[in-house]
Length: 466
Image (cartoon, rainbow, N blue to C red):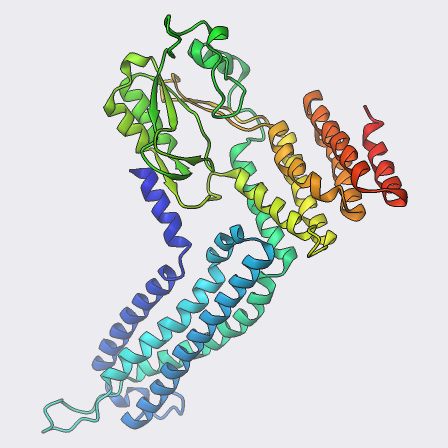
């Protein structure tokens, strides 16, 4: 249930209606409060100040009508410009980036300011009365404090409009788009990969001993790897697994995995659960999502509780899917290197951020797949990606496009060269060398002459370090 709440929260904050709606409600409350205060303040309370002098009903209506009419017009223009910018960015940089622009707070707040000002002025306008003792509507009433508030909101709206004019072109500038994704990726890496091991070596070994034998063959692999039954020596005569399997009851991309609910469900049944797929993977009805050990405790109740700890949707979400952020940078770089665009410098920008992300992963402790409860007992295994898998996603997926361009190709190899000092293990250094070797093989097929010589010279700076 909590996973669904988190999923709906993500959808709400990415919508264009939520923040403007909240701001419109706040404006309505402000209007009612100021009108009520105006009813308690006599008209001559403001004295003879030219700025706060009491306005006549006709003048009040003119001010409020001018502010309200202009605000709703500007709000429509802001919405149109925002949609045009989103369409442009989606077509130029990739449809996956639509989520980034939908989440932009600047656009949401700008639209909210204009809508809130319009709602405020309409409610205040309704309170203005010409008056008269016998007309049945009471004496003349001009809410001067509320009108002064409308003027303040109009001035604020002008400032927001100036900000919006600057924000839209800045927001779709390719360097800022790539930087936004890159910073989000680095932030996600900080969350997924601690700077120091979260457990001591002794604690880690104690937890490893709690791993069921049937799960040990998949230890250290990617989520979803098949278990080698012969190696772990488990199962009955017919080769059935020694654990229960919980299949998906929904279709879509896995977006949220609520670890707290997962631990509670596993603890209540005293089982160990292994998640067989990671956020971002497309699941369908019948696909195994959880493996529960021991098998005899895998009941319908534990299955329902485990399925309630995840949420799936129509698209991938960057909240827990770190590969999605890698894929966005890869997609921009790949589009930039396509023959129809031919923009190697945009690809270079993406490669720089991919290098920064891989350097951050190389210098950190590997993700811990073991999740324990409050008593230190193993409850769940969620496989975490490692440096080797992520460098294949980051650089391996760009390799085929950069290999046919001398400028991007040379920078590709330069990034790998600069990544080597950040590597902490021999395995990581081998993964970097492997990327350089495979890239050079592709470049020799796609390039020739001076272009190929440039690539080979760049490759030698990294391959000669072996």
